[in-house]
Length: 202
Image (cartoon, rainbow, N blue to C red; front, side, top):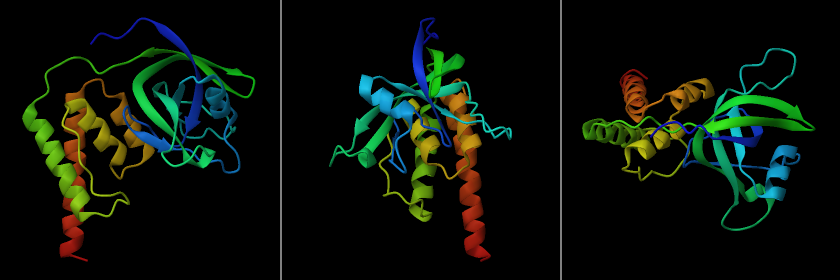
């Protein structure tokens, strides 16, 4: 799929994590919801959720330019702010951003994965390794049912791998599903090898 040339204007929500398309991030009101979230809810508009770059010491939040367009939804049991969730919709490229009152606003383009064939063997290996990792390591989530569609598999694994935010950002920035799955397979192998070694030599 070609990159869209259409630009959109979005409020930017700088965070300390990465949200992938199709994935969810809970929002809490401690001590209160950020102004950018409140405004997005008020106008029923999407947000650009962007990982904050490592601090530069001046307190300024500088977002990574590859981010995720996300929408706010209510949790299944209540409409309280503690039940709010961000749901990733698609990857975007922030072309520019500026301060607007209490938060950042940016110009962005949609950035879908480049269209290329994905090896079914690679997808199945990623799913198998992902299932194995979740069966032997407590990651704090119920045992998963991984998706089958290649792009969805790559985003699901990227969201749940026990890696730091900068490594997640690297996965988000990869332009093809094949490249993302290949890197995830390497990461999964390394994590499983490390776990097995710990079990043999505690």
